[in-house]
Length: 261
Image (cartoon, rainbow, N blue to C red; front, side):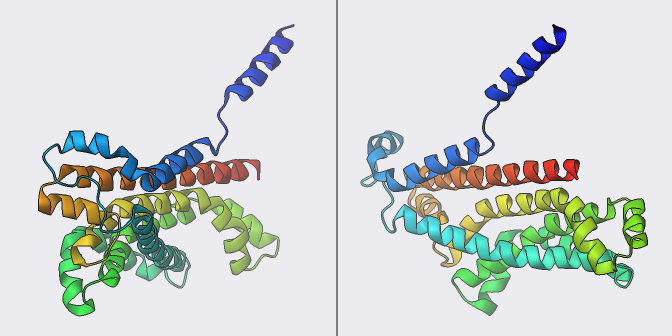
């Protein structure tokens, strides 16, 4: 009888549990609704700025600004992931262990400079536009990826690697089939942190001519129009929540696979 009751409770709990993709779909739907129907909310923004002549930012469509924002963050994330994970792998090998302190310090150096300072230094060399903000995002987002790659790879138990070696696996096979799968949840957590932070930081690109979701915020600050600021901030927040919830689902799946392995 007790077994039946416990089984019934477990089944009920499983039915109550929300689907894993619920939150990404919810936040993504809210994001798309906001960028497509922003003009329909004019009465709300008119309440925020009753004295403003115009309350809906229209120098560029929010769908266009969202695409530009995703492009900048995506390019920076792709390069940073490749460089950060590769550097973490290299310094955890026997032939690259001497460079571990140097790599850790260089990665930390990127976050000691505020993104605004990086932009100020990059613009004279790279000019105005998208490239300076991509460079700033790469430097600013490198530390979490490098740190978590090191933590993930160094956290793999030596006994597992020794067992894989005893089975005849070569170092490259051990890395691909043992170390990286076990370290993947930790590495993905670093990527998640890096990308989520850079979604907000990318708004600074509007100050150097890189058009994105930061445009309404900067325009609102310059013109004293809080409605513009709210529109840009709201869209960026929904984008960050969408991407962050996607990473959370991926992390859960990786943890489940690691526990089943």
